[in-house]
Image 1 (spheres, rainbow, N blue to C red):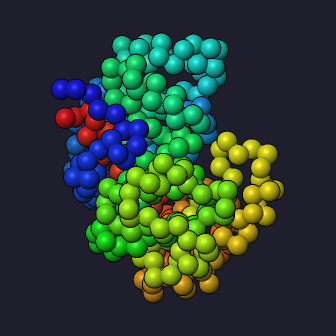
Image 2 (tube, helix red, strand yellow):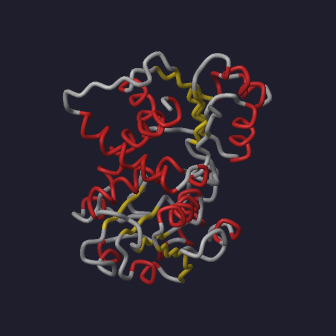
Length: 300
């Protein structure tokens, strides 16, 4: 069977994505129970992280272990990539040694090049363009709390960067309506934006939040924005999420953030403790959605 990669949400069909979310729900139910399932017994994952990672790394490493496999985590200093080895060469070497590779790097083209050279599945663990693994957990969380996300209204407020791009893809794949509020000059990539009719750009955070079933934000200065922090704080000041902004949304709205959050910047000091906030459940679901993804790619 031909190998599959997960570089963006568009690599899977809507039906496959829904299957992943449902499987993640089952794996979560089994997590604290007596059910023992080790479909990845004897399988090994290599995790290449050129950027820092907490939730993604822990979820994949713990997930491989819980599924019976093993994970090896490598940063730039642990590999020859930091010493000039071509990406394609590293992909071919690891294809001879492990069963799947999970890559986090700034340049999305690096992940594409790696996947093209590898004979084993490759997962995008975040690039400057997309963060697809996070969306699996986000959709799982919303559907646990509010039912199917199809037809709902989602507001993304903040930087039109990798999380925003993945929400655009998610709107297309799951069939929800997405409103995006970003400062001029920080809006999402026009080509990605043009890929679906489910997305609307609005001018203010309040416009985006109006009647939203789900409200999402991300940090104002992500990896790759080093040195821009002060300018970005000024530019994004009117896009902070607080309780008053949530009041513009539906009464039963949910607030999510992929974390880590910078309190006092994209969120105020207290909104993460608001009962409408689901960030801790969202973070925990990274474990189960990524287990479902690993199982899908390796146990078919």
